[in-house]
Structures are given as structure tokens and as C-alpha cells.
Image (cartoon, rainbow, N blue to C red):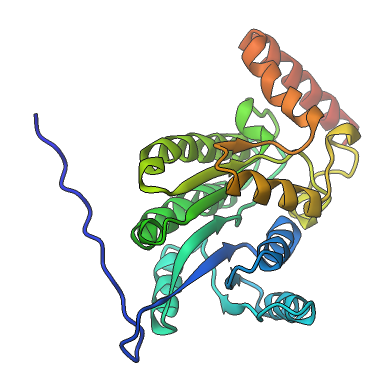
Length: 280
């Protein structure tokens, strides 16, 4: 039997030759769940690096965290949706003498509409950010994360547990995130590395505006604040949980597709999307 060669782990040194400083890297940190996670990790003493496309918002968040008496996070503006984005981010971290001990893959987006009618490039951009960039960063930094016995928190969604007429590519992208996270949870736990998929339901953030989701599209009972999602996500991640679903109704929502015939679940979700489309 032939085994694939094991990846080589590169030990980076800072420009001054000192050992790199371990940090918690949070992507998509400029708003919403990402910003809430930044506050949560900072409140527990983690040294943070925040990244997203919008540098102004990142700096405002870093100032807000510092105003609470925590060390000001390092800000690195980056567009992880671009093919070169993860590599540029890694180079900026290396130049600053930093390496991830904890990686929070929060960057992502979705679009509401029929897949056949939505813009092709935008739908491929969902895959690029939600999946390709997340996988790139996870595998790129897995060496430093393992050395520090740190962890990886991947922000998915309850959408991962069911097909999604009306948001087909988004649901599929989050199913990938959960599958990858669960597999890595098993592969890395013997090395002392935590891997967790955080699967919130609807959260009132700017995600909905970008996805063109009406304010009443999701059942109100499923909605949770970004702060609550971040708090429960952090606690579950640190406790070593494989998957965290904030809120009882959301946990039920993830179980129903496993208990009911998949065709029945798909038929209901398709009916719901058709009704929403008729309402405009």
C-alpha cells in the first residue's frame, strides 16, 4: 500500500529572527458574526489579527476592542475571495512575525434566487470565498495551529444540513464546510487541535442585505443575535465540540432533515421558496 507524502511544516521566523508570535486570526471580521467573535475572543485574552476587505471598519472594531481594555488587534485588509488573497495574507503575517494558533474562518456570503437566474460569476465567488479560501487558510496554517495545539473554528450555517432551493450554492457551500470540519476534527484531535463547525440560524446582520434576503424570509423563532452566536460558538469550540448550533429551535431544524424522508424535506423547502418568490 502506498501512502501519500506527509506535508512539510515550515517554521517561520520574524524579521528579527525571533520566534513568531501565536495569534488568533479571524476572517470576515469587519461586521456581524465576525465582529462579535472578535469581541468574544478578545474578552478571553486572545491576541487577535482581524482581516476583511474593509480596512476602515476593521480599524473601528480594533479601536472598540482596545477601548474595553484589551490589546488592540492587528488589522490586515485582504480580499480572500481573490485567488492570491490567502497567500498575500500569509505573507503579511509572516512579515509581521505572527502565525495563527487559532483560525476562525468566518468570511463568506450567499445569494437568494434561482441558481439558473443568478449571475454565474457571483455564484462562483460564493464557492471561492466560502470553500476555496477557507480550505486554503486551513491547510496553509495547519502546521502552526498544530504546533500550538490551537484550533480551527469554521462558521457554517444550519443551511448545511438541508438542500436549499432559492440559495442552492450557499447551502451546498456550507455543507462542505461542515463535512470538512467534522473530518478534520477527527484527524487532528490526537494532536490536541480543536476543530469545530459553528452553525447559526438566521442572524440579523448585513449578510441578509448582501444576499437580498427580505427581513421576514426566515422564521423569527430561529433568529439569534450575533453576540449570542459568538458566545455559544466560543464556548463550544473551547469545550472541544465538533459542531455547535446556537438555539434550541435551530438544533431541531438540523435534526428534522435526518429524521424525515429527504424528498419530503426538499418538497417543503421548494414550496417555501416558490411562495417567497411569488411574494416578490
